[in-house]
Length: 257
Image 1 (cartoon, helix red, strand yellow):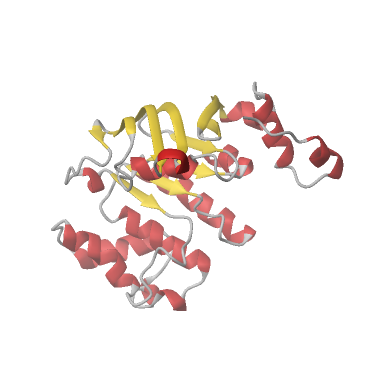
Image 2 (tube, one colour; image 1 turned 45 degrees about the vertical axis):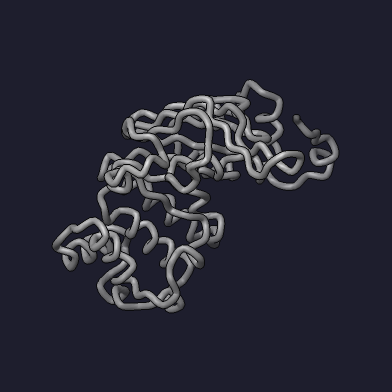
């Protein structure tokens, strides 16, 4: 369903250029949940934005269902949608929930908006009382549920998730992750999840790739992460750091080029 091969992304030109993604390759099967994990600045979100068609300036191959990302194919948004990290910034402050959910249907000429909006809200655990509220009348978790509902309006086959719970309280994070798992099973969705949180990746994903400084350093099954058996020293250090702050552990951390 997803094929990335030799992906390279560079920002800027000349001496000021930054190679944000370096020769990244991976595949994701239909119905699979795949994770990209790494510290901040490792290139995870940049790769995801390429696949969403938001950054057409890349080298290499980035395809979803055989369609090249950023190609301008009008059917592409019907196949893949993205849920962003910040639920406070991804919804228009002057648009009601109803308008946010109806707009994709209008753009793509799909009818029966009333029933589709009601069904989407029900699927994400929000009743009809939320339909005509504005984003400032919703909690962070409710906003993210609306963002997920919006992503489902076109009935895509693939969801790209960019740190979808990192801006939320811990208790709300679990609710959103469990919601995504239910939706994946119900709609046979293919998920590509970006996170720096190894516990989230282990909970949500079948397989994962570990990124460092724009490149993939290791790919493994989620079971290997759960049993703390990564092959690469960088991954082992990432796993150690994810268990919480420890002065002795922090003193031994090294930088991997």
